[in-house]
Amino acid sequence: MKSFSARFLVLGALVPGMAGAQTISGRVLEDSTRLPVSMATVSVLRVGGSDTRVAQTDSAGAFRLTLGEPGRFLLRVTHPFHLTLESDTLALQEDEVVTLELRLGRHAIPLEPLVVSARTDQRLLDFHQRMRKGTGFGKFVTRADIERRTGQRPTELLYSMGGVEVRAVAPCRGCATENVVYMRGGAGQCLARILVDGMDVKQGPGFSLDAILMTDMLEGIEVYVDVAGIPAALGMGSSQCGVVAFWTRTPEGGSLTWKRLGVATALVVILVLLLH
Image (tube, rainbow, N blue to C red; front, side, top):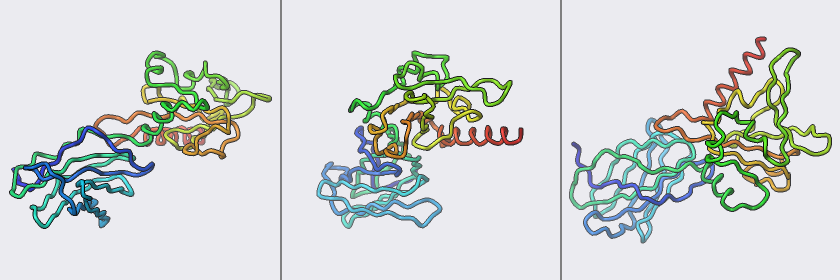
């Protein structure tokens, strides 16, 4: 087993990061005394690249580094009065926040393989924060609501949602019907703007949401019927008919996200329609 000059521990508390970025934060402590180590240099190097981010710890031993893109990284911590720490590879997915406790020692001590046991997904963190605040503008379908309504397709979860109308529309004569989401009001022809994990997704006859989403993929749904109540994070002012935002769950133990899977499925559906 290799010997290193520090230990990595995962803290229980997670510090929210920036939307659309990956964040590594934490504290550097002396291993024997548990006192904070100030002025330690924490470097994060992207594996296979030249991108390096550097931060220095403050008087509390705290540091924070925001990374531009997901990937695999190596951590290195140096201090004039402690031995240098070099970590195993740390993989970060999109919008993840990882909080670590790094213990520097004055003598080499064994370091177990780096294991991250606590992560957060910024997009879902933002969704749950809006739901907890309950501003009155948004209407929410939680994961618990979805699990109680097993067997339903994603668009069918909106049947009882006030201000929303789900219509069965045939994309062509003799074709099977597909659900299309409208916002009620006026002539009832206002096509809802659809977001999947914050990304605009086309819907309408021939572009079925139920073809690219499954209920077991969903963490929750939020609906804004009143355009004036749409949060800035969801593109306030860019919608004329309200927004329905679907949020997918983060799969366990894999780099494939439901967002990527949905996009790939949508492309396949579009290609099939074009070929016909």
